[in-house]
Each structure stands twice: as C-alpha cells, then as structure tokens.
Image (cartoon, rainbow, N blue to C red; front, side, top):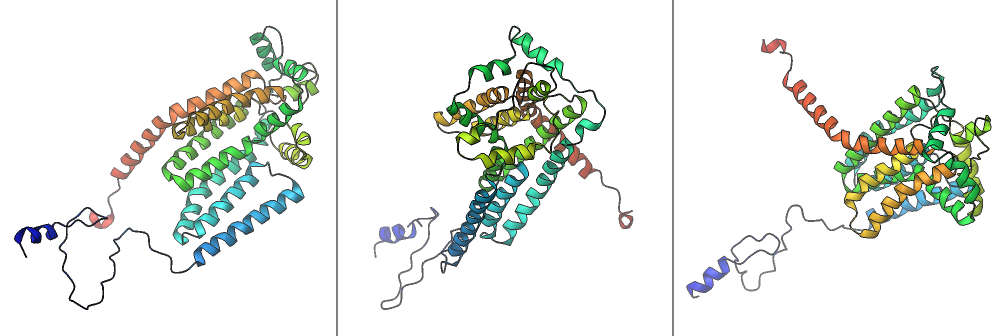
Length: 353
C-alpha cells in the first residue's frame, strides 16, 4: 500500500468527537465489530416500560385534576395550585430516577414552607394593634386624578361582559402564574429557578412586613364601612359570564381566610411585574415581550376596576417588584461573602491543637 494511503487512514476522523484514530481492517470472514458508544451519549431504552409509566402517571394526574374541577370548580387557592404543580413535577421526576425526586423535595420543601407561613401570617398581621388606614389611600387617589376616585369611575363606565371575563381571568391568574413559572423553570433551568424563588420569597416577606406596619383597607371594604362612595368587589364577576360560577365561590371563600386589610402594597401587581421581569430576558419573539408587558400593565387596571386596590397600592406594588429585582443581586453577593468568611474561619479541632 502506498505511504500516502496509509497516512490518510491514520487521519480518518471519528464523526462524533472530531478526533483521529487508526482503522484496523477486520480479517476476511470475521464478524463485524459492534458500534462504539461514547460516554455521555443517550442510551437506547430496551423496552417501552418507562414511556408507559410516564403516560400512566400523567393520565392519572390529569384525571384527578379534571375530577376535582368537575366537583369543586377551578382551583384558585395558591397552596392548592402549588400542590398540583408539585404533583406534576413529581411525575416528571419519578420517571428520571430517585435522585431527581430527592432533588425535587430538597429544592421545593423550604420554598413551600416559606410561602405557607406567609399565607398563614397574613391572617393575623392585622392583629398587632397598628391603626388601619382607610381614608388616606382614597384621598391620595383623588389627589392624583383631580378629585375623581378611579375605582368608582371605572365601575360606572366599564361593564361589558367581555371585559368582566377578561378581568376575572387576569385577576385569578395571580394564583396560577407564579407557581407555574417556578415549575417550568425548575425543569428547564435550575439556576434560573433558584433566582426566581429567591425573588418570590423576598417580595413576599417585604409585602408581609408592610402589611404589619401599615395595614390598609381596600376600596370595597372602605365603601362597605361608608368611608367612600359605593364601590363593589366585582373581580370575580366574570366567572358567571364564563359559565363557571363554582370557581368564583371557591375564590371568594378562600380570600375570606386571609388578611382583609393587606391592601398596601398590591402584591397582585407586584408579582405580575416580577414575572414580567423574570421572563422578559427569556422571550425570543416580539409578541411574547408585548404579552408580558401587557399583562403587567393590565393587572393593576383590573385590580382598581374590581375594587381590590387603589391606584397608589398598585404603584407601590410595582415599585416593590422593581426594587427587589434591583436589590437581590447585591444581597446574593453579600450572602456569598458572608458564607465564604464563615467557611474560612473554622474553630481549631481538639486533635489539631
């Protein structure tokens, strides 16, 4: 064989790695050698059992969710919705092995505990003795809008059925969007999930501290006590238009268990702005960016129309979201430095003395 052909065979590339190897021809009549499989290449499943298990689990979860909706209506409580998201993540993790399921529990249990503690604490945050602000927020809205109360004006002039349906869906999405975004981020990018989870916890704690120090009545409650002109709580009125009255009843009953004077700031607005800030860097198309910004803008309009918040509540909620996004990187760096210092200064062990 000419020397040039031998050199060419020695430089034959391997398709998957771009490396070079020597091709040794097999003896005549010998069986073909099995194909090499490099470490890290996906293993081919021997049978369809993992796929069948995944299908069965997802079907069971979907059937349970459909049955619950048929009996009790659409779930709108945040803890219940978070439970459904975690059930879906558990199905996803189960098919990937016990280590993935363990990671799910390790990541999510602290977050769930913090959010449940936050929801529970909202119920007694108004019992610490701080005076409830009722008239001040209404006066601030009138000052901003030339003597007109925006909630009363919107309820008087905007009553179309399509708007009621849209407003109810936007209002109720507050309970769905944040758990859903957290679930998707955990599956696709755990680093982004961790950052989003820290932002959610930080925003919740900031809101809770404000509720304790400055309890404030929403417009519908101030109107019920005769402090302002008649204003109704109509944020759930669209469920009847959509043919889902049970969902509205369930939402109203769930809200009856939380702090009724936790109006300042508006965390509905804050979380809408926060989710917009979290997802905007990942949006690849213009319509996605437009939809995210429209959602963050539409939420406070719906809240003011529905009698849930004053305009000043929503402005402060948006400011809280922007503030926590800007401050969190500095807090993370400070936490890492403190952890590094604590790790560097270790007490001398007795046997090392």
